[in-house]
Image (tube, rainbow, N blue to C red; front, side, top):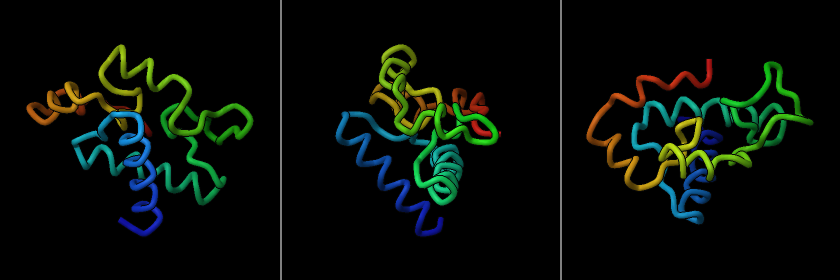
Length: 108
């Protein structure tokens, strides 16, 4: 992981800690999304959500992470759509099984 990706991961950890969530315990899945977010930060100066963005990015319409709906998604599913932020119970379930993460399709 390069310095920008580490910085992105640190940003996500701070968001999770501040709001009482945890990051995806599956590092492979998390790092994949972190990579795309770091690329967005370099290209556009913001952490556009790689799972909800247009291709190419539409800076006037695409959400920045954390997106406006992520807390509702966590309340409903235990995790946000991108599988970055989890509540504690859902994260524990992931630690005990790999099933959910095999369904992650974000990004590309």
